[in-house]
Image (cartoon, helix red, strand yellow):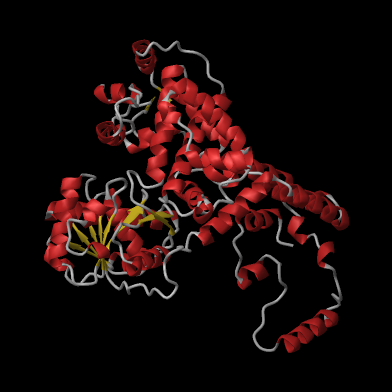
Length: 561
């Protein structure tokens, strides 16, 4: 009826079409206003008068005529393979549409049923269903009274006009909430406001935002340079440099000027929220709102619950997440919370692989083949290696001395190779081009790091690379569950699906471990513990569940024993 191009767009995208468009593409024959029976009878009489009579939809071929359907199908097939590598169902959708162009209706429907059953029996179906329900489960907070009423958020403010701060301000403007953006001086403020204008202008240019909507949203963002202007804000989000002394200065200012009942939120990605809350006389009003960059694009929001965060403020934070159309997940206070705490393990093991004999290209390719959106070294180049260096310095100061760290990243930073911002990092980049190219200087660096530790470099296979990195996520996730930092394993999965590029069709790291079998995962972790040291000490919860033949998905804290 609609033709191959429109059918593929609707089926693969899943977005409904409006009635007018459905009529345009012959999915419906006629639109009407008024009584359905009267309109239907009038239409039927008109068909008879015009001699068109009854015709079956399945016998119509207008949508297939005058078009190279095979070329359309081939092009969409190639596009899906490139954009969604490893995803099972879209290619079966394309095959079903192709069958409609080649087979009589009855045979085409039989073929479609076969393809549907293949999808139904695919392991990916269970993973995607898990991801669907995980998002709904995350809104349920076990110990939050059901009658807790969130505070009304009519106005917001953001402290800091960097990339993250502007992105957060755009989130509020996109949701129709007036927001003040504070910077320390007028020059910095104008740069921040220009960044907001440029971001919206890009959306207009792409066609995803109208000019009128851009003007309306920009009008909701007010630039300020004086903390006194925050006196009437219902919610203030701090998004300044990740340094505790800087955070202290900001929260002391906020405590002095913000009205009673205002929610004071920190966008910290790893610092102790309880220490931040202690800089105020109202720790019950302090909560973490950890946005992910770019904040106006990424769906994930870690809602960090401090030791003294009130139930009302926690409920308000979750309501804010929904208003901003974020996937909000409650997490507890620890270094890195859930996402970044686990990422530290993942990134460290990826660097150890470089000392053992792998190259950044091999590690990144193995994890992309697994389904990750990007490999860990491409991600680090994008973020900037200096960001990781600051985290490593803090980690080395607080972690036990017997835990060994990889040194490759330190060597790159010492050489000024900080990633895309310097044009060279784990990869090399041509000016104006983000395509990662081989960095020829790395081979000697890796060899020196291996020699220094007495490691004989060797060839590493893809399975080893995947297990070495992903099982570190699983082991740390088990510790997080046992400590109560996350409520449930599906919350961890949700964080990794929406914030870290983990493939939805794998269900998240904890679901993936369940699908492999916790006994098998534990056996590999024990081998790595014996060979690679204390970083790999198995999590007690993982050992317990594996011994009992249980899964992370079936575990509840009150039954942990």
